[in-house]
Image (cartoon, rainbow, N blue to C red; front, side):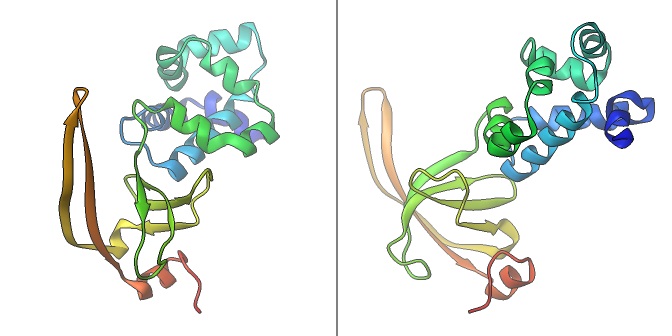
Length: 187
């Protein structure tokens, strides 16, 4: 508990906490990392009394000023979250705060997960493969395990002021490295 309170009260942590806020609000979201950043900020905020104490700290602490500049009342909103609410939707909340969402495409796989369809979410650290309607990926492939073999534009149609296109990407995965990183199990 005292370590959580120190997150926003210890002056030596002001700069690191500001960096954490800035990373959370950055234009290149990383779903798992942003979820952890949000939880750290929430842990510090929940140890601050609501009302005047929170308002005072939010206007003075560099990390909280950054959050308030993004969205007025954000510190109070985060502080009011229950542990269950944070647990249920930390990733969604963290991605809402990003300046831009991660890039996502509909995919259909061949080979390893033959015929699997869903959404591929490209973040700064991995490709997350999500089944239709699921928030959590069923497979995350870190970039260091992926090799791009081919990338082709298959069709493009112009209409209504935008282009609709299909891209085929041929990737291979280093299965040994995926096992070492714990991204998949043997078998």
